[in-house]
Length: 211
Image 1: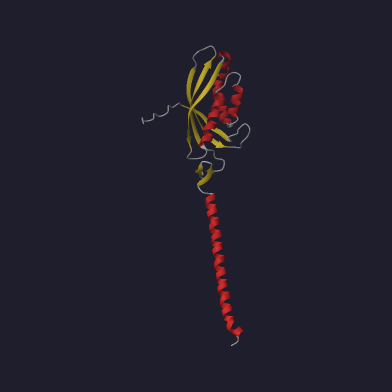
Image 2: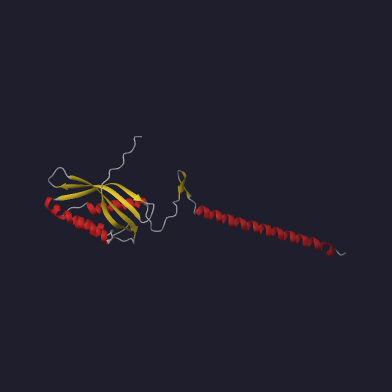
């Protein structure tokens, strides 16, 4: 047996072992890369996000996925407050402007209904004759958020004031409407549309039990 013939099997075994080792290392690195990518994706879309400040590390919870275009509850509340302000808070000189802003976020039937109520009470003539001024105070907003579009009920008090009279007149009221998303615009920055608008009887808030 020659020296070459003696060493050839050892070299082949060494090469085979080296290939197996390289294959194991390659597989291990591939699995590690896959695990790191999975962990990164999980952290990216995790319900908890951490942020660092000079005073420490804090956790911020990510909100669950929302349907595109569906507003938050606080947006609905802010929209309702602004809508009622435009619809019911005005005087002889701001009546047309404020009412126009309210009508810009209402569908045609709802807007016509609101205008008909104002015409029945001849609001503009009352303002002109008695130097009247209306102010609205929103008491609460109830949102039926179990289904979209949302059913919104708002309760408020309108303060009717007349120049020259010390005491005004407080008129409680309520409205209910269906709220759905629409295109945002300068006239409708919230991108919300009032439909099926109607007046409802005023209801006092439920008494809270003593703590």
